[in-house]
Image 1 (cartoon, rainbow, N blue to C red):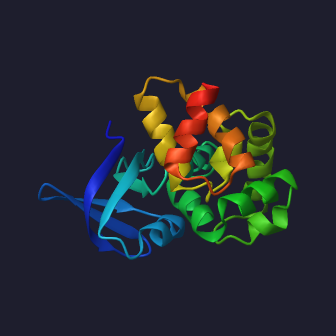
Image 2 (image 1 turned 90 degrees about the vertical axis):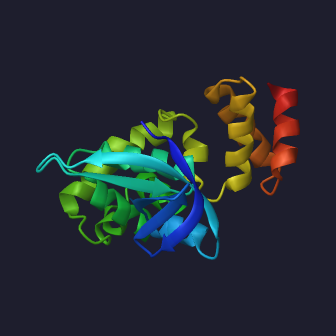
Length: 197
């Protein structure tokens, strides 16, 4: 399984990105959140999720600017009746914070306003995702839903994992640091996390 691809950003449209890695172009479906994060860049890293269409067996790769967005995509597609195209539409229509608030407040009308999401699907999303958000079922749910917790937090977390720390401990430390200093740099997050871990 390919986790991420980095390289030259060869093509970027609001729905697709192509990364040139050693002369091979990897095309991925993307959300508007990822498009906004990549717009204006020449180099990029995209975190991948391969989805297989159960109807015809076709495969598509979805790319995300952050692992947090990819985790959110996985949560949405875990809802019965929600496929990859619907999850991408949700991520393109609402920011992660707006989605979190809509689910926690059971704002079915807000979810229903997303193209392709009907009343029953919106109700299922609230039912199946609310407990996961409240209980923090997904690793670092607070961090997961803060779309702009930032690339700095993402990079710092990756660096800390490479140093051998466990992901749950890193998530707790990074969340605590971001609550105190939301605009901390990568270096500041890593230094503060090392004192906590």
